[in-house]
Amino acid sequence: MNLDGQIALVTGASRGIGKRIAEALAEQGATVVGTARNTDPVHSWKTDSAVSERIIPLALDVTSRASCESVVEQVVNDHGSLGILVNNAGITRDGLLMSMEDDDFDAVINTNLRGAFWMMRFAARHMVRARKGRMINISSLTGVMGNPGQSNYAAAKGGLNAMTKSVAKELGKRGVTCNAIAPGFIETDMTDALPDSLKDNIRKVVPLQRFGTVDEVASLTCYLASPQAGYITGQVIEIDGGLHM
Ligand code: NDP
Image 1 (cartoon, helix red, strand yellow):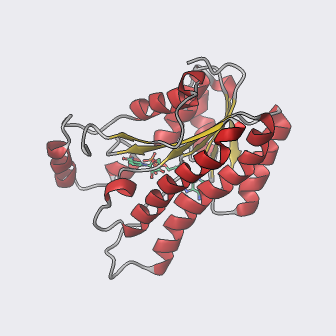
Image 2: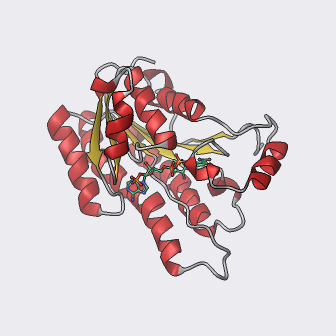
């Protein structure tokens, strides 16, 4: 998967899945702009990375339209193009339907869905002009199956899956692919917060009997970003140890 000379932008690159995706894309040869609201963790993890020189931290809050637009423009101005966009930034604010705070609903939709919309819209300007590009949205199995206590998160991720297909249909003729990755349970801070008893129960119902790793999600992302995946678009690819089949 040779990504030499490619310019990639990854949202939510300070930790977890986004951090590993940013590093893996750089390992394949891409120059990677790794973004988060707080970029201190990106600066610190990149110093330990063998591909440190190809990782550029940049502050971005995906809930701000102006921030999304200016970061995309800055990447293109500084590096001459934007070939790969990975919308990974995401949050959870779980709560049952009847007690969920409106602010928690809005925060999850604004971060996980509208942020990805803005990033794709601003990146599309440049990808369409270049007649090539890869958009990869990190969704969730919850967006496919639903999950109690996550109606906000399921709506955002389900919306992201549907938006992925629409964007793929719009931009296919311009050489731009758009796919979503829907992870099941992956070992990160987000799932570390779950009670141990719940984690044990999850392992029992996953056919592969374990949580996935950030490496496994990053490998799939690199593949979708690569020339080898040139005929794949509009897909929601589940990476879940067989949880949903
Ligand atoms: P983490 O909570 O570990 O990391 C989330 C990242 O998103 C951080 O880098 C955070 O940085 C960034 N972020 C949060 N809010 C914003 C914002 N408003 N603007 C910009 N960046 C933001 O999450 P994971 O690594 O676990 O998850 C990554 C993605 O994968 C998410 O979209 C999540 O929904 C999805 N996913 C994860 C699963 C799992 O099992 N872990 C399963 C299914 C899907 P900062 O706070 O500094 O901005």
